[in-house]
Structures are given as structure tokens and as C-alpha cells.
Length: 284
Length: 284
Image (tube, rainbow over all chains, first blue to last red; front, side, top):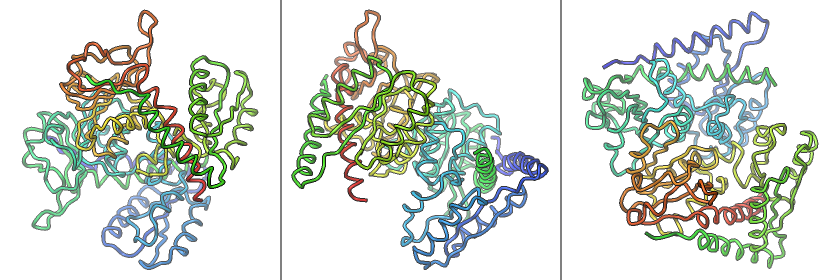
């Protein structure tokens, strides 16, 4: 079984972004800029932010943190947020979510400037995926899955794809991305009666259900390509994906590892989408 | 095989809308209002407009036609369109499409006020389906399919649904609507290798591929519910759907006819969405 390294894919995307940013700087233009909005100090958020900042530095994208205390008032939060939302010097905004309940995440989703919505949390960005708008963005994780398959040379057109999970950040946008790429797509989830049957039928299987090592050899067809989007802690507190990699050895043709798979690609997709937002803004 | 009458479903929805409009009028409020935008005089458009007007009259929704000659300039078109787009007295806008090429339909899709986009042509409306926003709209035909199933008492949660066709007005939005209703969904299309296999596996089958009577008994599982979205002319110039109804007799549990099926429901869904847009506006 071929293990597809997310790090390699990330390196490939990052190089493309860095080359373009270097070119723009040489032309005398300013660097693209990302603002990361964070509320409180959740370890997950801090860890993701560190990774994102490292990546932006690597490719030459400027960044700034907009940080709030956990108990920030809704007025203060949206006053500051609206400023960066309007600021012409900011190309992309990444909000580390979920927000604390009192900050009304729905309002955030409705207000975020869609031109800067580089992680596609707003309905306009998500709708653009449906109509195949090339200037739109997809949630970075969903877009990362497609980038991995493309990098690994896996043909998508005409293939049977099964996605386990229907979240707004992975399952739902991925269905539309795969349909747009000519795949025949099945989505299953907690209410699906026979998840095994749906998975066993897939040539490309995307696991994004958040259940540690659920997907074992009983779910995987011979020769399938398996993309593991899960990040879980197992009973021993060890980081693991939704796929039981040992079990599918000798059955699947390829699989992404956890860690070092999809998760490793996300920040480079983010960088690529910030660059895209910047270039879209230049065109206007 | 039970034939599900679209007319009956339409009557049911229309009654609900009319009762509510009557109630609002009694409270001294103005009637909801739809503007139908039409360019040129295509027979299809005229026929659809006639049906829509008849329906709006039936339920007490005011309507107005905004008509342009086929060769209207893009400036004139968008000047007028922007006026109704901003007019607080207009709750819903239905644009009969496709527009002539020179009118840049992409611009229309980007500009339409999402609060009035009662046939869900803009990305924001489509994205709202993805995040399950209850104040959003779905394309009337896609929403009509769901209304038919609900009216006919067909349980959707946990069912295997296959959709043949991936258009922006039917297939793609329907996937998201069905996922939101807990179905396990498969989408197939022209690039699918084995459409029969995907269809035969379905408990609910939606045919929206635009191929006269393609879906025959070889595609349908015993006891399946079949919804026929197709409107085609057969070799003899006779109106027919995507389903060969005679062939699936004794196999499918139920099927919608063409004409008199999904097509008959569309304008009542439109009326319902105009009312919804009006009530959303009242709330603001």
C-alpha cells in the first residue's frame, strides 16, 4: 500500500505559491496578507495557528493575529472584525472556530467579506463551489483532499467516490467538488443504514466521520484509494485517523497517514487561497 | 404502481400559502409581490410565466412583469434590474433563463439580491442550502421534489437516494437537501460508468438527466419511489419524462407522471418562497 505523504503535497503547493509571491514582490507589489482571528487560548487553535504562521512565513505571505479574550463582548468583537473585513490591505481572513456561543457564529458567517473568506465559511463561498466559480474558495480541508488526489496522480473523473461524513467543512463541499470533477459520488453518515456497503463500493474513499479507526478492511475495496480526514485520540490517547491503516494494508492501493496526511496539507491550501484572494482583488 | 399527482401536491402547498396571505391581508398588511423578468418571447418562457401568474393570482400574491426586447442593451437591462432589486415593495424576483448571451448571466447571478432570490440562482442562496439556513431558498424544481415526497408520505431519513443529473437547478441542490434530511445520497451523470447499478440500488430515484424515457425497468429496484424531473419531446414530438412509466409498472412502488408531476408543483413552491421572502423582510 502506497502511503501518500501530505508533507510532500504541501511542499508542492507551497513552492507554487512562493514562486508566485516572489514574482509579485519583484514587480514591486505588496505581499498578500492573512489575518487570523482567535478568541481565547484553546490549545487546538494555538497549534493550528502556529502551523499556519510557519507556512505563511515560508511562502512570503504577511500575517497578523487579531486576538480577543474569551469573554470579549459581541460589540467589541464585531467592531474589530468589521474593520479587518473592510480593510483593503487584508486579503484573507481565517477565523479559528468554534467561537464562544455568545459571539453568534451565524452572524460571522453572514458578515464575512466573501472576497476574503479563504476558508469558505460563508454561504456565498459555499454556493460558488456549487456553480463552479473559479474565483471562489473551498474549505481548506476539503480542497486539500482534492489536492492530494491530484498530486498522487489519482484520476477522479468517472470514478466511484464515497464520502463518510457530511460536515459543512468537509463532506458537503467535497460532494460538490467531486461532482464538478466528474466523479460519481455517494455520501453516507450517521443515519446511513449500511456504511460498509457504500464504502466497499468506492474506488476513492474519503473518511471524515470522526470515529477512531472505524474504517477497516471490511469497508475497503481492493485497489481503492483511501483519504483519511479524521483526527482522533484513541483509547490510549494516541493521535489516530478514521482509518485503521494496518487493517487495510494489502487491500487499499494507497492511503494517507494521520498525522502527516490531510492535516499537513491544510495550511498550504490556505496560503494558496490567500494568494488567490489577493490576485482577485488586484483584478478588480 | 401509485401515480403521485403533482396537481394535488400543488393544491396542498397553494392552500397553505393562500391561507397565510389572507391572514396577512386581514391584518392590514400589503400582499407579497413577485416580479418576473423576461427577455424576448420564447414560447417556453411565456408558457411558464402564464402558469406562474395563474398561481400567484390563485394565492393572492401580487405580480408584475419586467419585459425586455431580445436585443436590449446590457446597460438598460441592469439599470432596470437594479431598480427592482432594491425596491422594498418587491419581495421576490424570478428571472426566466437562459438570458441572451450578451446580458452576462454571471453578472445577474452575482447581483441578484439574495433576500429576493426565490428561485435560488445566486451562490449565496445555494450556499445557504449547504449550511441548512431555514431562511434560504432552494431552486423551485429541487424544492418541489422534496415537497412531493413529503406530501406522498415517503420517509426520506435513512433511505438510499440516487439522483441522475447534476445541474445547478436540480441535481446539485437536491444532493444537499437530501443530505440535510438524513438520506444516503448518490449522484450520477453523463460521466458515470454504470448508471444502472447506481439507480438499481436506490430506494428513492430522482431522474433529471433530460433523456426521454431513459429510466426503464432495468434501472429501478422493486418498491422504489421514482420522481421524474425530465421534460422531453419523444421521437413523435410527444411530451414525456426521463422515466419509461409503462416499463416500471409493477416494479416501482410509486412514480410521478409527466406532465402533471414535478412540473405542476414548481409554481406553488415559487409562491411559497415569495411568501417566505416577504415574511423574512417583515422580520428585519
